[in-house]
Length: 385
Ligand SMILES: O=P(O)(O)OC[C@@H](O)[C@@H](O)c1c[nH]c2ccccc12
Image (cartoon, rainbow, N blue to C red; front, top):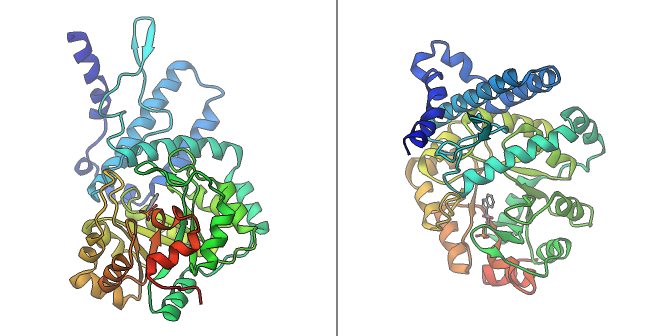
């Protein structure tokens, strides 16, 4: 037992080597490096060195990587971000006699489902990046279908119907609700949504937790469906934005609970360059205030579901649009999207009165045998013409 206790304490030893924020005098300089850029740099060094490195050098590099990630997490924590980013190699291994093993501790066990998804995504994206470099992706952009105006489509639908523009979600399953629809044909669902009056579509691309795919996104894009498409992915690396565009996305999602301000700034700039809309998702006042402080944000989603606990409460949308926040949003002409947990015409009226001009809906419509008719049920009237 004593032995275990001291082993448990081992990772803290390397933590102590990390300077705390107030110990770093050039903090503002370091802070200007978004997490994604640090990752790119780290991966380059690793790629160059791995062929020639000895075991002990490699282990030292792993420890450094782990420390850099802790440093990045510290910066994120100052912005209230609780989701930690794990380096793709995981924490350093501990040697015990001839055995090598990794102890479970609070540092290497995800605290909640969102953190688990992000850690898994980190590994997934590093592998994908090895197969397709940013250079090849950039070349593939020339052959990508042209972008469609996602925000324009939401505004037009709102003007046409007097109701919030609908982003209808092509969603097979979720970690909180399990499988929503067994006979899942993404293109058929997308067609039904378009016919039922959806302004835009959201297509889940995460495979492990939502049973989605980039093939679904590509298939919908090339099926003749005209609605602009949101690539519903957990974006942690700019590479994913380029990838989404090559697969036909017109918009991407940036989650404020995961991304520090500088990443959001940097990524929204990339979106503008590529002609994509960025839907920046918030869940609480602090995230909303952070996002309202970022220049150039045009589309904010208020998620009524806490991605860490799965709790859904649609009054969250109202809470975040009250008072000065609502005023600022109107001044800046930002479109707000009410997200998650919307099932009835009353729910739609409730979030509309709170100030949203668009809604993002999955479960309640994807479950219906005809998802197009599901839209009529959701709004309490036919919104297709
Ligand atoms: O199925 P619902 O409760 O109507 O929710 C749709 C959408 O808001 C939800 O899928 C969602 C909102 N933000 C996300 C981020 C990642 C994955 C999924 C989501």
